[in-house]
Amino acid sequence: MAASGRFEATISGKGGHAAIPQHSIDPILAASNVIVSLQHLISRESDPLDSQVVTVAKFQGGDAFNVIPDSVTLGGTFRAFSIESFFQLRQRIEQVIVAQAAVQRCNATVNFFDEEKPSYPPTINDGKLHKHFQKVAGKLLGANKVIEVPPMMGAEDFSFYQEVIPGYMFWLGMQNESNERLHSIHSPYFTVNEDALPYGAALHASLAATYLLKHQNVVPFVEAIHNDEL
Image 1 (cartoon, one colour):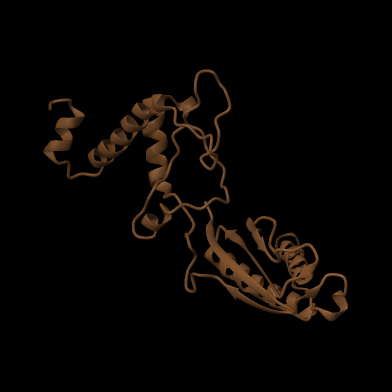
Image 2: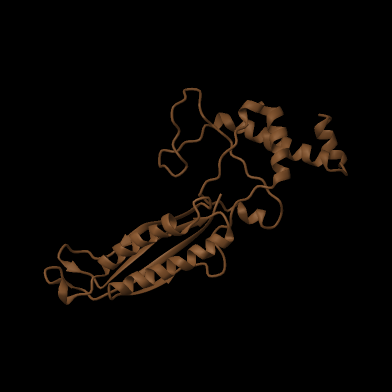
């Protein structure tokens, strides 16, 4: 999964009556141009083979139908698989926001919250652990039950472990027998199919035990577990 960051920008103009916009400096118009221009960073500047995302998910400005506000706040998230692309994208986001606001005679400030690093680093599974997982999961669950998941632009705090030691993250499927569509984890209708939990527990235990047995020295306690002697 991707490295992710957050940004929030405040675009300041000059408020006034909506019927006489010539006497104002409209930050909503400036913010609208900013949003469109940010999308060009992906479609026109990033390598199509180097996946990146910029999404504006927050837009707050004004509270009346006939008043141009003094300022607008917008914010969102940006993602990239590589740290180099992540920081390049962050730099361009700030440049675009400030420059596009200036085109509309507005001022802009940008806050990235995390100055030195992404909010979440890329989640990168270790290659050797991947082979270990495929072997163990295939024997335990059946090779047809082990499915490769393509890279995605979500972010995961498990990545902080992987910055310290080699790590491996996998997902446990929990599709129920009715084959009804399950809601995503971000849905208020999300529910857990608890029938899947014993499989997950067994898989975790098998991954740990077989890894320790493979990488000598084998401690007697682990060997006893493996031989069902306890």
